[in-house]
Length: 89
Image 1: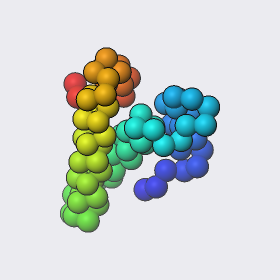
Image 2: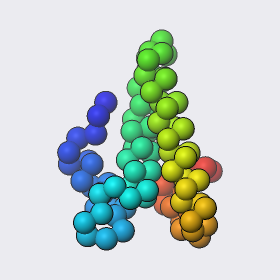
Image 3: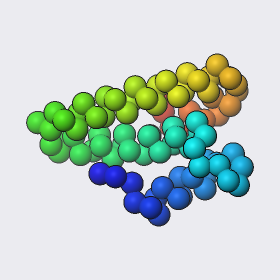
Image 4: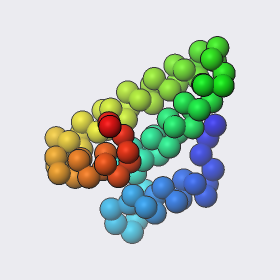
């Protein structure tokens, strides 16, 4: 279920703030969102995989904390980020 190195680099390239950025909140949120979507499809097929469900809930909580951090710092950037990621319909 882990991200491949190529997919991880694609996410970093599209969400980084500057050239050497690999761990900003935007990048972390984008990676978590990708992992959450992959794990959600896995759980639809494997309904009894409770360990993965717990991991999914932990990832959702982490993404929620990072999103609130971005929202406190710059509300306009937060709105642009969630629109770009397609979350919080």
